[in-house]
Length: 75
Image (cartoon, rainbow, N blue to C red):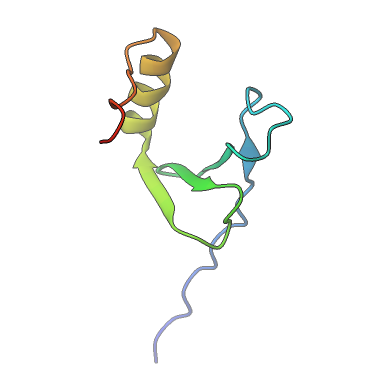
């Protein structure tokens, strides 16, 4: 007899405070025990990007010190 799988906790999704009123360019995040999930707010049923805590912290730090540059057009 197998033991029941533990239920997954309910995720609390939130939008960035920088999202503003323009609902066409928003992402939502949800923190988990091991990192952060990211999804398109217009397609909550769509794909979700899962980042481990260290990768999420590097990403947030990169944004805060303006180290991340956008891809060139057409890429």
